[in-house]
Length: 456
Image 1 (cartoon, rainbow, N blue to C red):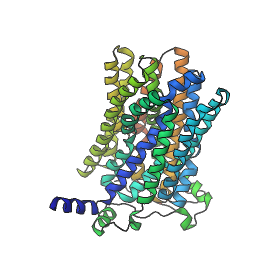
Image 2: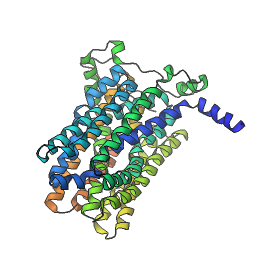
Image 3: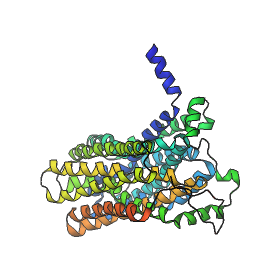
Image 4: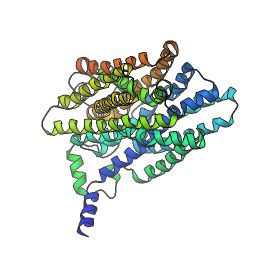
């Protein structure tokens, strides 16, 4: 009984752990939805008679919408609140994902357009996801815990690959590829309902203890959303904030690095299973099982990067060093994927990709940095711009790789392209970003500028 009572007291004083757990579970489903087409890709391309180039365009459909809707999504978050917007978005993207399965019932002549359109709508609904996550973390978590919290929801992409890549491959083998989309759609709708029921801002959470409220307040958490609509901030002033953000060298360097890091992400989410099937000669089921191994290392790397970064902060290192060192280490490790062009056995390919996945996970601290340095009045907008650069990589990466494979007849050049982007992220954080610091909050006007606050 004492242990149970102690556990209850611990939970009562750490409601923020429930928040990050639900964000993690939601993001597992989110990333699983993104991976559905890559798992079904070989079957879909064979059934519809699509070339590598055409499959590249299908893979990019999600990212086109994701990019175009980032700024509107950021505006919606700042005006209506991240929790409300994200809850509705979860249900929306899940319904569109389920609808993709119905394409199997359509004539082949319209199937390509239907898949592209539905994947586009999934991207529309998912656009506010990462900016909303970042804002929710900034509401609930002190600065010294934010790197770990962010790395947890960011590492969901690897955990999703561990769980869903083999599971979806088995579902495709057992019942056919449309069931991949049906299963993920139903899971997402259920998750959306739980999210809407359980997630609230700290100041609105009736079960939050006074002790925990004091901890997160003293640690620099936001506690309560301040939608721009409540302050009657005109739309032109909100757009002026975006212009001011883009005009700062620090933010521009962070955005460029996110493009490069997202290139690695979208390679793993789109072409990696196809690479295992078509270049390495694995079955869909075996490719799903082997793809889970590097994903496990990516998950470990993602959690490790956040833990190490927060540990360095607690030891007194500057925010700049604590966030950048894991990124430098991770991007250097990610370049090891080039070695896959020089090894013959599937085991060595998995080892090289596991090392690359681990490095990519360790270096994926961009959302923690955005939470650390965003002006509070335009946090949603800053997250949206940051994610826009990432989603541009989601458009470019599958299309470029598709045509590279089609013209070269192999994935060798594609792996070099992805590794060079890891090097680009390294260079951007080293030479462009400079010290990490939060600019002073301003009331933006058409000619507003963001002045840096004192560096932490």
